[in-house]
Length: 203
Image (cartoon, rainbow, N blue to C red; front, side, top):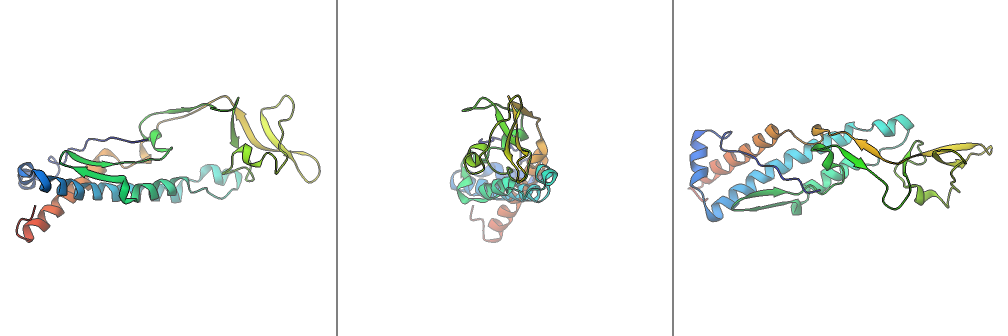
């Protein structure tokens, strides 16, 4: 999902800096937006990295190793290709399936199957049922809503729970707050202008 957020930096940089920013145009404006975007990018990547180290509730509940879902999001945000800038602003592209939840509740429904399969055992965590079906001889016990395998004693070991859909509630804390983004962009703007002034006004 590509997330668009409008950040009002002029209110956060101080009167003197705001006046200088308002005077910029052309290449100088692009350069400033790039600098602002870099600080927003860094703030976002660090936030997602922190989440990657703390949000393992499902994995911990079933005794599985984390999949690195949010670490992947942080890596994608850090990529140079995730940030672009022009005279009108900077764009940070957050291309990750979990990001949408930061802005709205998400309902997941099956696409190529009759039901969703959610891991409930460490063997299944981080895998789709189709990946394990043949290797573990998975099956759906008659009258049940699980996908299972036979354990060493021949008993039934549930690996996945089946359901028609699931709704994940919005969680804005998955990304930095609007204020944190504004502060990061304002810091980037102030530092870029200070450096430019120190070098004789190269913007």
